[in-house]
Image (cartoon, rainbow, N blue to C red; front, side, top):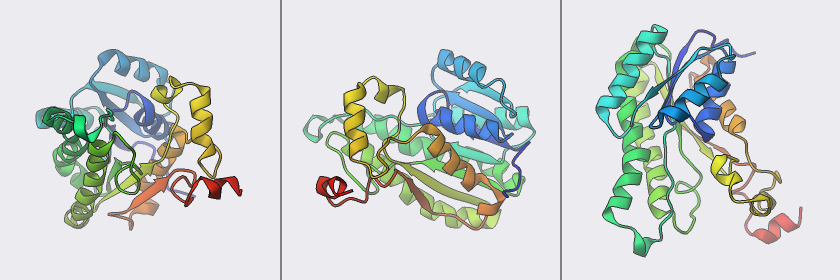
Length: 259
């Protein structure tokens, strides 16, 4: 049995939709007080309202993780609302598609600013509060794309996700003396609002390429993040956990056909 996280405090960036919302919901269901961030106030308000009945208190703050000042405001707000901060889920991310020959400097900078720099900025802003917690946790939402696999049109996205893992390995060493761990969850194909718009036939094709024969859910990722936040995970840091139903395992489509 894991030690209860009831009453602990968390920030989830990019928490109004998709995986971020799933993480926020999982933490709130475990009794954690959660501050979610997003750039769209309407989306924030809807998610906060939808999660109002959770055991943990859920509130929102409109913020842009590419701004170090916004990140400091987020941490200050979490400390003020919850009396401290124990957990940071660096989840905010974007995944625009663009072939290598088409990418502009602006395209590359936008993805790196949100996915990589935004991770660094929110962690930097939270250092003092996480140190004061005595059991600080940082959970990064990376991806199998970049660190392990590739996909045409996502070279800049893949680079940003690989950069997150390079960051966390050294960050883990620097944070360990402060009793702060930092780990990453690497999702495979997960059902979110964006994927649902692609149609059932496309979803079925994606699921057929996964040994588990289904796409992941946001709860699958939320549960992995929740584990990293527990007291029982205190001796795990600088690590990455693939949550993909076995998606990266087959050598070819033929391997799946043999199952």
